[in-house]
Length: 177
Length: 139
View: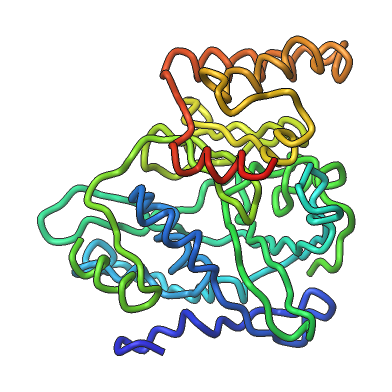
């Protein structure tokens, strides 16, 4: 927990084995470091808002939304509606991607850069033709784990809440709400 | 941006650079090379187990790509770390040799590879030196 009461170390998320149970995740500092090094700010905004559930900690955040009557109930990764296991792609470690869990959500909003004197980030509708995917490796206990990547992925035209070609890209669907 | 910098430092102990750097980065935990031409929201469009292309929000512009399992491919290929541009070499390999065997009748897939290859050549995209070391170490 930081001085701003953001808890980015202990992120609550549904278990990949049972959506009614919660587990605790942390974010790999290596990827955050690399994204910060190249200043890939949009992906960092996604980390704070679409994973941790906090608006990005930017000066005067909320300025553009001050007149909005929308109640933003976003909870980040807790809003996951489907979890897959296993990525069908090459990996250096044998079966290295078989144990990866992919958390899928369809957030209402995303934060984007907006040039301005008061605030440089504004809330915007999440792209209609995309879903949000978070990649997780569980620790041996199964109760904790590490988030090591996240991205917007093209939606499947047959089910816009799931990734395109999900049957070809993942080994199995763990659960879906 | 100062508050955001401070937050990243406090939350993760990392330093946010002032400006976006356009480069092909290697992410070891994902074993993936990713190139992004701009700091924008992107949507990943999986072409096959090796290639993903990155579009802007309305799919009108092509803004980058990912080559997945890059080190895994490197280890089992004849690519050399002194190849002038490893990305070009890898993509050419897929388009020509492996390409013909892997997707002989899948023109869309072949076209995706060709487009990325042209993009890499046009933008003169290379992998950062530090990242090259990581890819080629003890391979």
